[in-house]
Length: 247
Image (tube, rainbow, N blue to C red; front, side, top):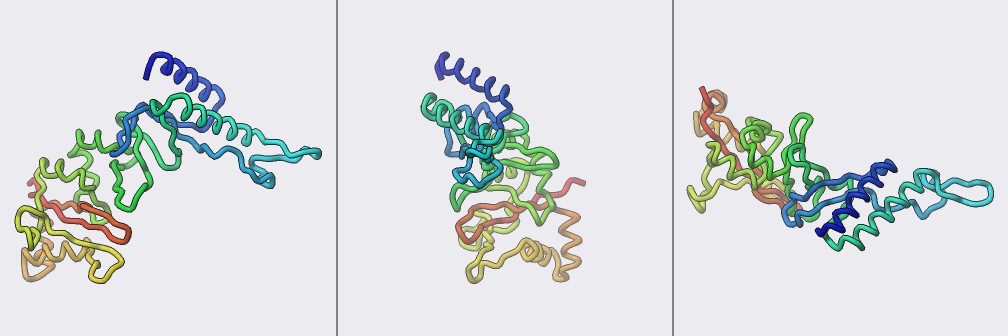
């Protein structure tokens, strides 16, 4: 972005702040597949076209006019149109109900899918959310949110970091052996009925024929993680990783 556009962007942000518009700004984008440029996110729809919408319109007795909220929404839409026309991709506009920013670096990433195979590129903890780029630099802290949980799973992009932290495949794939982790599937189709509970019971039985004894042995010796390795329209693929528990 050249100096002139930088100056225009600075004045535009001052205008947004001065007028109290519901607009979020992000210094860049970390979402895979998107350009890392300045982002401005908002509801760009403008006021409702239906005059019966009392949130955006009011009847003065002579005519329908925009309410304060309607005028704010109209102003926001004009800003979005200007950004797309003037900055030519150096600044992008997105919807504020689909994107948020990283707790660490402030850059933007998606919170809702844009395709069937989309996987979250972030880690969410208690009161914080971190993008994938920053999570890779804080692997152990982020993995702590998922260890020994049957309700959460890391994404495939975290598996390299998990491996560097000592996690390995709990079970090898029967076709590819030690080169590939055993794949589990959960979905709508027949036989896609794997669950975390079933996968763990399989591991317990490898430790002891008595599943209760096997569970005690396994939980004393190992930590585990679930990892999502792929997702389609009607199913997900996932695996189990383990590492020895620190004494």
